[in-house]
Length: 150
Image 1 (cartoon, helix red, strand yellow):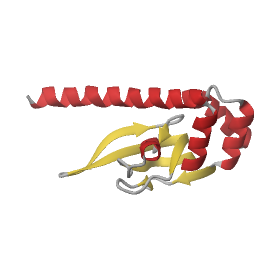
Image 2: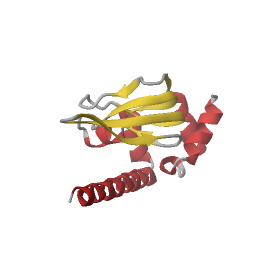
Image 3: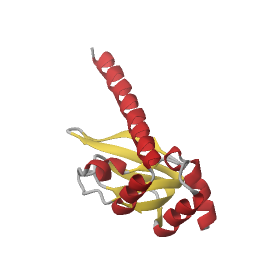
Image 4: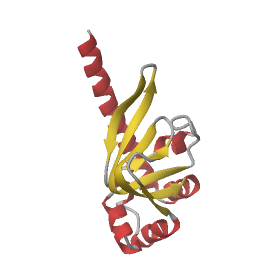
């Protein structure tokens, strides 16, 4: 995938829609493209967060540790961001994420991510919206689980 193709993928993300094309090109150029094979971990729950990943192709499964073992809680695909929570609030990784099939990502360092959020305030708003959407889904899942248990 060329820099131009990576920029086009980034432009489709709500997070980056308001960023000037030249900045997106710089982001694509300064980020690291990574390919993960099926079952390979991008991150491990509890590890420090040093970067976020944008899914360019493929899917990744998200697992959390429970007293009964790992529980799959989500599958993330193209145009989604992975790992932003740990870099946003400086906590250990909240989940383990593994490639489901071949997965291609763009790895964005914590420093670069924060620099972009500082330079483009609209990006911060989009990050908040995405986190709010995830919280709403989690709340709905929890409500459903509690109703089933009752």
